[in-house]
Length: 125
Image 1 (cartoon, one colour):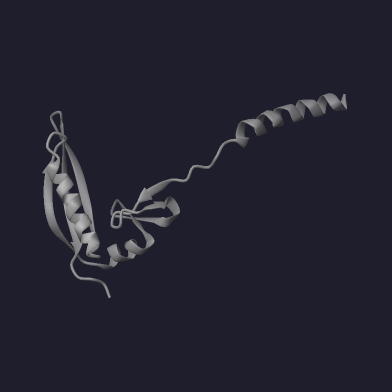
Image 2 (cartoon, rainbow, N blue to C red):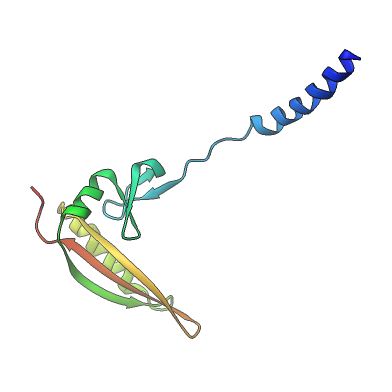
C-alpha cells in the first residue's frame, strides 16, 4: 500500500519535472533611444514613453533638446524616414546625442508617421 501511495505522488511529479525542465527563461531586450544599442530589460529606464540605457537616461533627463527636423511619411513614401535616420547616425558619429520621436495617425486607410529628430542643445560637462 505504501508503495502504491508513493507511486501516486511520484509519477505526477516526474511528469511535471519533465514538462518544465527544458523551459528556458527568455530575457526581454530593447534598444536605447539615443545610442541604439540593445540592452536587457534591467539595463533600460523609461522616460516619456521612450527607453534609454542607464548612461543615456541621465543625459536625456538633464539636457536641453532642440528639434532638428520634422517629417511626415507613409508606407508608400518613406524615403525621408531613411534620411532622418541617416542624420541621427551622422550626429552619433560626431558624439552628439540625438533621438527620433514618432507618432502615428490613421488617415482613411493610410497610416501616417510623424517623426521629429532632436539633438542635445549643448554638451553636458
